[in-house]
Image 1: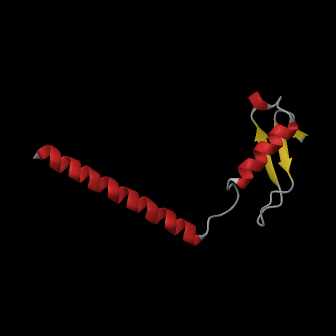
Image 2: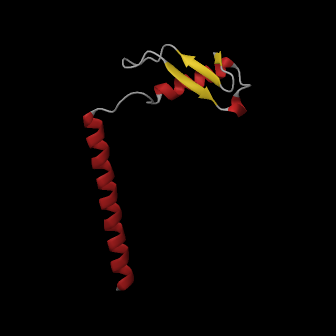
Image 3: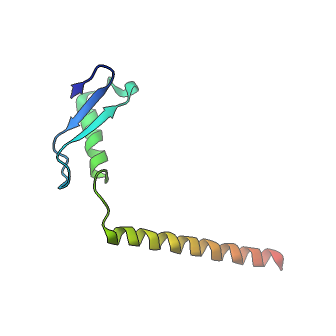
Length: 87
């Protein structure tokens, strides 16, 4: 862990990503008293949850299709409710 003049910085040397070799995390002042192991575990979780890993084109398309399907279902439900209220 590297301590700066005004900020505490956690350097993660092995990110597990094929794209990045290092990651730097700036610790919020209210958590600067946490142990290094707790901060390191939290940083590893953040990296493993997808930070720093670009989405593939297929994942982007799937997420857009899923969003469109949700919007379509919501619009249909709204139309049905409106039709029931009007009649």
